[in-house]
Image (cartoon, rainbow, N blue to C red):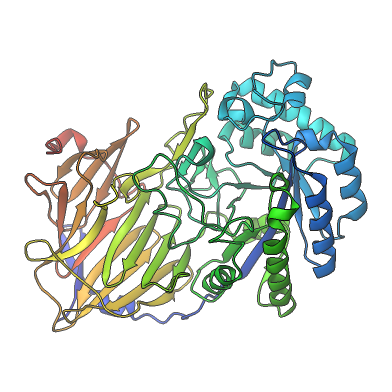
Length: 565
């Protein structure tokens, strides 16, 4: 069977062999550099229990010098005003280290800015007091002015790097425009953990944010802030996503050395390093190592020593680049004028189970393909649009929780229940699962595209190609089913933001923002009485399009979807 893509051009139909497209030459291993930032950030107070906050910094400084690994130190205001931290850094930092800003908000900073402290403790992790989001935009600027003045007083210059679990656009814009910040980092994707949610963004690596939304990748240079934002903590690409389905918050499976499974388990670390450094990553692979001092040295010491030793060996072998956040951002800016495409490919499972995960992300969308044995699904698909403004662009957050998100097409975490898992799946006939067998074969296609093939259990081959503005899924081979489709399904009682279906387009409205998923020539329909949308193949393929030129909403012409049964 010859598999063909069709693309309508000026009323004509152009047929392109999908198999030929997927067969384009491309390296099987990652061609971009493997970059590691060691980022240790420093708080000056810990109200949750007695802990020595200076000891971790001393020991981390020793590890850095012992292994000659450049380190980024991000210091919170309450530590910035304490000589036991600042004098230690001045004396013991390595020659290639950098010191930057950790911009969580604390009581002495607020009072120095002439504002009223509303927290329960001198450092309070609740969003409405401990993060800039809890303050009016002009107040945020005052808080940053106070921080920067003190930093320059202590260290003689302004920092070039700034980090925080969550950073709002007005604050990040101000730090760049007023103080010349060149690099930033924020928390991994998480839902509800510690009271705040970041969901649907770049899964890893780095992006240029929209000036309207610090979490949203910009699509063009005109509307982006030229401060690369790197994702922290090193999420498990297989298991982190589904942590806590059905609950109000997620657990943590990351490179942080205080967690097991995770960075405190040497076997997990070996698997994570192998996954990041030895699989296709397109532009570059990235991980952030290190640990905040709040956990105390006893909790982090074993895991951190193991990681430093392994990173040192790889760095000496020149298999990876261990560098500061500032240096990584400079390389990023010099090489990329807009956000590059990247990928995270996990063809194995740290637990030894037959689970796999492939992430692809461009400045237009992100997608995740996940396997449990021979069953596969698109677990996540989010659209990026720089015009989708964040909630805190001109308002503050009065509660202890905050949310950052992008535009969901499929949200396999929030649209699922423990025994009713959402996803986009391949089906034949009357919703029979289209199963695979064996491992996917993944290849980079040039610098911006990723493809993979996987044998079908019934015969034939599943073929997928991820391009920056297009996702193509097809079947090939004489034994491949001819009657197949993709089915988008979600758990009973969940309400995805699907607004309407118009011919070949699914229209969405999320937080009042309209967007669309064009499906090429595929027929799209709601299955009556079910929480499912069927996307029928056209000439053997389903093609999703992304980008401003492809995402015109057809809401006004739409057939409104019926409510969930």
